[in-house]
Length: 258
Image 1 (cartoon, rainbow, N blue to C red):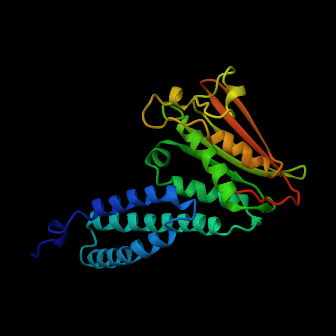
Image 2 (spheres, rainbow, N blue to C red):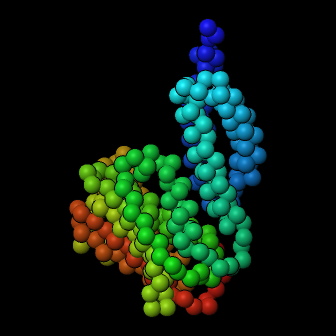
Image 3 (cartoon, helix red, strand yellow):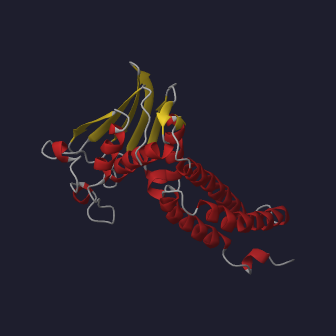
């Protein structure tokens, strides 16, 4: 009986996990249009080789679970690269264009599938309605909704019930996007201050485990929304939930600020 070569080869699952971890780090830089070409150039060829090797091993050892796990992980890495490329392509285009907000939301949620906390411990409810496109810059909306979604997720880290709800709809010549969570909520005393620079409640809500905030995220979100004459409203019950509602009017105003 031939020895299984997987017993002698390096741990492919560890290699895949390492590559995925590097991708997650590079994703943070991808939103400013950097490293996208480098990611594709440096990872596509090694990934193709790994897929080929694992596919051969799967045919020879069809019951080998490590091979199956490796192929599934490589599929996930390919999806992540496509999500990063989508952000990079949008960032590189400095001109305004017709932006599909549902597509922006979908990309942000797909990227978060590679966050183990979000993937394994947060229930996602998504209802993206039929909405028109809006004139603007895609990177603005990646930053806006990426920030709001990540805030919602971080607020639930110490909660037993973790549910993220993302909705979009057309309403009265506007587009409304709602992001709701069952997190720690915001106290009535803090609520009027959440858009102030350097004010953050994250250190209070997540217990100092590496997810504290700078207090600049929501301020940046509101300033960017003002470019589009848009509004942001926050309803919250301390200890129970938060609902963030963004309302963008359907006007011909174009975004020229960076």
